[in-house]
Length: 443
Ligand SMILES: *Cc1c(COP(=O)(O)O)cnc(C)c1O
Image 1 (spheres, rainbow, N blue to C red):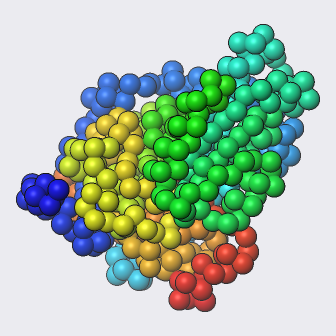
Image 2: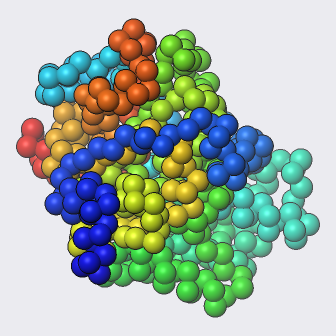
Image 3: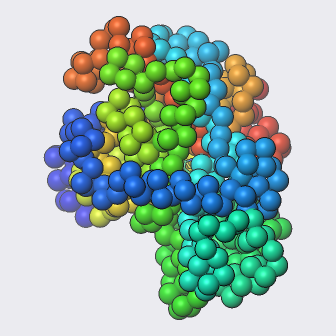
């Protein structure tokens, strides 16, 4: 292994910096147009439309089963807000002006489970439930799905089980929606999962199985349990197209939000989106949806902790899921829940590598600092992982090589919109939020 690592470093000097846990950024020289990249994704607009229509069919059910979604008629969506004070704070802190405007996409406050997982995770369970009910002759696509809230359907779903491996937030989403529909659901949780998430799941009637090891082990165990039971459906965070499509619906939703705020996106008004990345399904799916909605005018960057740079490692070396950070002696220990993933999704990396403008890593300390600064300047409280995207606008602005290669001149950059995708935090208990703020050193 040692010699393999040395060879890897010789070929990809950046790997040495990853091993040293340095904060790095890599702007992808192999980016192509959407048209050239699409065949590698293997999915297209019709797949997203299908997912979007499915979510619309379920909206009456969600509005009834989760009253907090009723105000938006059962559509699970988050706010897009301007954060000018944080923008000024970043500019001051890093001595760089961020051209254009800075917005925050608050998936942190999505209803039902308070994280980006309320997109993909919930969608995949709904798609599975729909298939079962339709196959059993209990439902047709033209029915009013609010009837799924009736006891008859809950009794039907009770015969089936669902299993998932999770560091926390995915388990929360899958567990809550599955239990509500009536499924027997097991969430296999890694050692780093928070106590309050386990407690919340148990209170919702979910079977929580705990492991002392990391996410990879929890997933493997969950998968194994599901294989021995034909009535058990395993949600595969690493390879699921359904999850990916659930996330991808965010693209058209964001487009409608930008239209409503009269924010233009075109060749002279680029859109930059900064997404925290764990295994890759969430940011990958969202990025795919954004590309389908905005074409080549949207530019996505993935952000990872210095201790868990699995996607950067996999894409940069071309090894994808054939390498994990532990192979390099990196410990995969980070305070960023949801991002503590050692091996990236091979599906997402291979599908999306031509469509992503860049990748970077940042330290836990920096996530905490950004967490404190966002709270102080905008009074918005997030969990550490959700701050990973916040450094992106600075790194992008500072990288003149990237901007020249992409031909973003000053005039174009002035028209830019930067969106930091806040992926979690809305349901974190108050005492945990206070502990996070303390760690920032600013409170
Ligand atoms: C899961 C998660 C992510 C990343 O999603 P992946 O699909 O694992 O890449 C980012 N932030 C938070 C808070 C998450 O829970």
